[in-house]
Amino acid sequence: MARKKSELSFEDKLSRLEEVAELLEQDNLGIEESISLFEEGVKLSKECLIALQNAELRITELKGQISDFKESS
Image 1 (cartoon, rainbow, N blue to C red):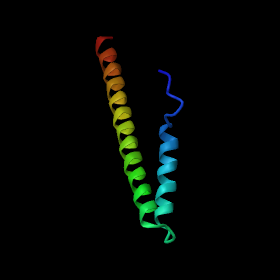
Image 2 (cartoon, rainbow, N blue to C red):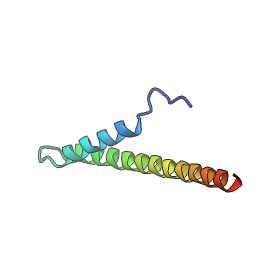
Image 3 (tube, rainbow, N blue to C red):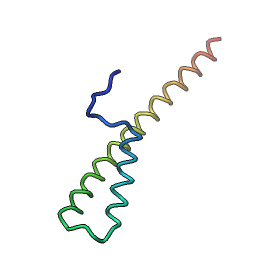
């Protein structure tokens, strides 16, 4: 399945989330910039969580296929 060019990989999203967290820890941000970064961080967190949940589901399904194969052998 091809990924849209504008869609970041999980690793890229996680890296950006780390950057956002570091920026928010600094004292030199204005309130609007802080809120904007916080919103971006929340969005990235949700996207990363969904990606992890989807990966877990795929792994569970694959493990089930292996179990089914072993049982039928």
